[in-house]
Length: 240
Image (cartoon, rainbow, N blue to C red):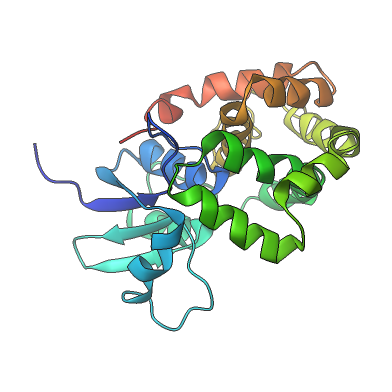
């Protein structure tokens, strides 16, 4: 077997290690969709900056997803930058990165993520992260939000889902503008990977979380479930 041509840097969970972050899922889904040969290198939170800083000097912060294209020794950080570069060198099958649907989705997706953030930030640390990454995550998030993730969680757990419901319902309505299963009807595109990535993230957080997502959807989760089934050929690979 020929060696992989791309290294995808991902953040590990507890064993068994698997993809969980919606930002990472966006990149993983597009690599799988394009049929590109890549390998995953797991990077703990505290190791992200030391790894990337030497290859991408001068950035204010260092985040994943990032990829290393081995053929020309190029490093790229940020899911959209990765998508645009991959699309430029591997245009088929197309991602439709200029679709107005991406902007329409983000109008509502921001509302979802803001409303649910106190929930998912705490559960990432308590349910998903490895023993090495958890203390770093707690420390940096406390610095960002000014309180512990547990305190933030308990302050908002009673209202977060109610606040998110209009945004989930709006995304359902956007999906239902065509006969599906994708936002562009029978054509898969990057907007599907953005939303599927978020749904996969919520699934990984736990059945209780995903049940609340389906309840908030406005159609008992039918459209979201159909989309996840439709992207399954590209979401099956989640751990290597």
